[in-house]
Image (cartoon, rainbow, N blue to C red; front, top):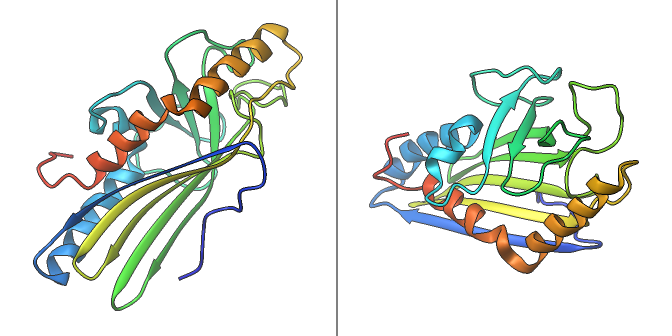
Length: 202
């Protein structure tokens, strides 16, 4: 299977993984479908997290909320603790640029990759996120043999200081700095653990 994680070139990076073992490959394959559904039901991520520091809303290409599994071209509207942004109308925005699944006889993997984006409800082309556009978040659910794992890989995480709003630039620097020193790790770790939690209800 090909490597779906972008190359780290600048800024910070983050990697977190959680996994669950099963008695047979058949059990693992069945649970992979459950874990995959949890990954794609982005609006339920806050429920999955034991430490829901942010809330996630799935929207279409125009920023309208939708209740369904994520698709390529959709957006995530993220409400994080702390000061909001004017550029994002109070939210941080990312665009889902890739959802790709690979299935072979011994293993399966689905990848969801998102990148900071402009606010789709406005005409302003500036990135409405505390990271710049070169940053990516790659989420994966994998099944290999009797193991099912969930992963999050952040790459090229550089604070977005290129907006025309000075207040947003200062806010993005502060939020990006807190993420860089690891304060975003507990949320992503909680999410990946929740995705592969066998006692979860969703």
